[in-house]
Image 1 (cartoon, rainbow, N blue to C red):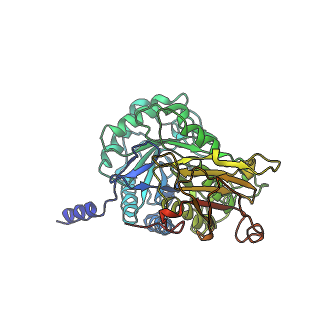
Image 2: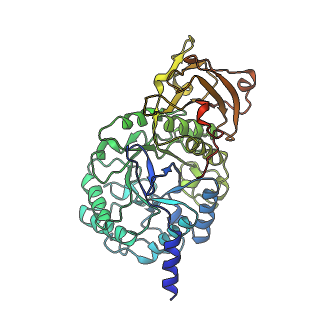
Image 3: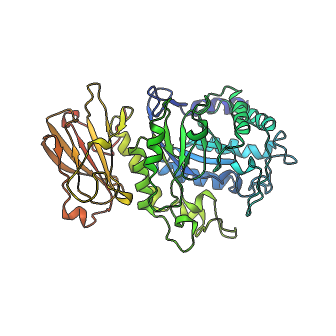
Length: 467
């Protein structure tokens, strides 16, 4: 009777399954509603946190508007030789064909907790280091997998969670698959043999994309790029743009940009990435065509805590880092995108016009200005959005707006507040009205300019209307 009651409760609370949109650019729910993937990298959650800590972390992320948590089962930090927080190792005798049910029961719990909170778990079966045939100098990352036992492990995972709707599969784990493609394909075969129907992708190392190796694989539903942590203004829009233009068309997102709180290039002498760096890469990647964005914090991915050896310059416990400024701000990007028609959105760099300043129209390096718009059946647009990392005189071509007038807004990426510029005649070009208030840092330095057809009667930017 108890089991029956649990199954009924579980069925009622299930989240909608996810699928690729009809135009192959975005993710949607099973009913066709847009799904903006707002992820967090909680890589070591399963390995290092107990049940109470998992619940606390997931509640915090759900309250901030995240809807996907990226986690790994066989963790990077001695994930197969050091037990999880409940004292269990994933395998008996380090054998992937002998999974330890006690270890995976904690994953069951995490999936249940996530589902209650409206969260999807993007689960990596193993960190890539457990496939590579080499040792890490800091961790006990043993090479465990062959095509045969990878297929067996994949089948175990696929069968165990084939009915879970709040699950996305992600192979890889910060590694290029080159030389081990047969292992990763076997793992994918094992998972999909259960016909659970969950989406699947691949997480590669910094500055690269899953498309380089697996774009044409049928099991790869969307591409992940990792823009990484090496440069203060990594041009992740180039990675997104490359994948956006591939055939066949598949969705793409930046699944690991610069972590908030990590030293640039991993150097202790370098400054740490802050919330502005997070915002810039978020808007750059989404406006370039990404279907979502993954935030990360250096102290959270490794679930660093007092008494643990910090990995890659951790400087505060994870339960303090969950309150970092950037984690409060990325929700404003998600809300902005969902407050306007989303599934017909395209990149729009061609609408940026030089104002005659010495830089090109779109800016360079840290100044890169980027635009997106929707496209109507007549080829026109109902809205345009332009992200400015800094106040920079880039004008906008507005003859593609469907209307004789323009409603303008400034949108603050820090607060989600929208400031009404007013309605003006659409003369085909819009000169950006930077004023002293904006230049002096009423917030700033970054802003989003929104220009739209007032006849659409859109809600205020960032206000998502639920039907």
